[in-house]
Length: 118
Image (cartoon, rainbow, N blue to C red; front, side, top):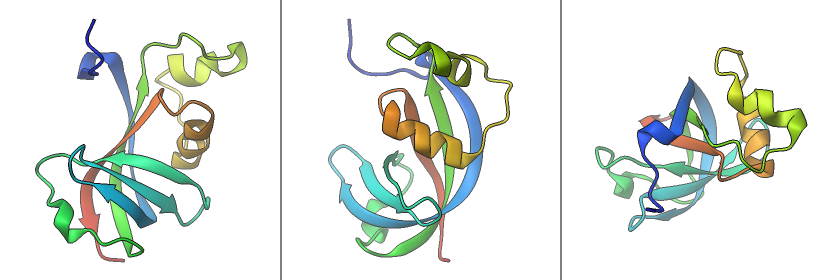
């Protein structure tokens, strides 16, 4: 079984803009670690090949347009949180997903769509 994740493994949830500070970046795996200004929590963002990662500078503030996905595989999720992941028609805020990322980092994926200067 492959360890790579396909789009069919994920449920698209929302697109939202977040003011973040880029903390670190890894161009080899196309991921960046960011600090969300509002929640003061860090999370990882996947960067598609269409975005030039060299334009991102560590400790710089950006306004990111992000897509959020949750895993369709809810194995290992506590019963109290199953509906958060399983029911995709419930409106949750970006803050909810960022906080849930800390409990279940492999079950939530953030993908960069667009970068704006704040």
